[in-house]
Image (tube, rainbow, N blue to C red; front, side, top):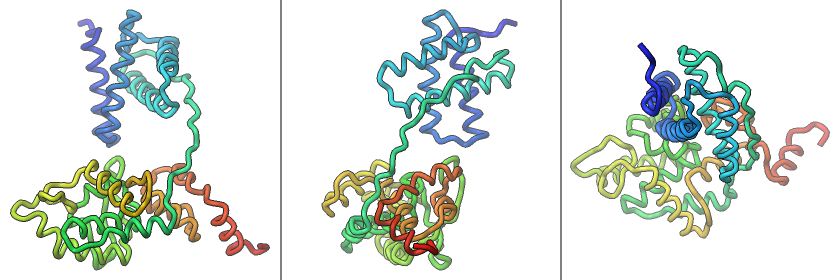
Length: 302
């Protein structure tokens, strides 16, 4: 029986590859969707040349990536597309769908090393403490901001929390990060105080009759979305006179301020939930004053 070719076959191979990523590697839905779009565009480009995914040559892949580069896509987008293509052909080769791997010798584009945008200690404090008030949403906002800055959570980790993930007595929480990996994160004094008030008074008022099970909820008691979190953070930043703040800025500030205070890189890696310490190393580019303070404090010849 001949193997099906054409658009349907391409869709089948891509779908099988993404299903493996979902089940075995635990990639996020957003990553899977981006890969699906990238690989569908590759299949379309190959079809215009009379080729299928299984019969593509290295030159075909180079032509496709060159076209992407000429279209003005960023090196980061190009690197993501290349990662999707490499993964697809490894999967196809292992499954006997192709004899060779045409992506094996493709070069990875060099990505610019960008420093995270972190807030100053003064701005971070102003933003978090500016979320004052006794109404339910103000109490909720203060608790969320305390966790973003005090525990370094990602936006997706924060909105994914449930009340049972918090242990105020033991002073930690359990969150699910990238790849659905779980980790324990300390909860600081100010965050515990804000969470105690939120769980005891504000959240019961917000959920009213129907409890969705989410820790942080909207005005109507529904689970707070990432977009809702972004909207809240931007509003609180503007109120504090801070421009261009977003949830990840507080996570960056959490890491940068720990390192400025003398924390070691491995500890910060564990707190952030980075699988690779290379991801954490970007935070080693501290401001000059911070580097000077650390040198004077820790070097025996300073």
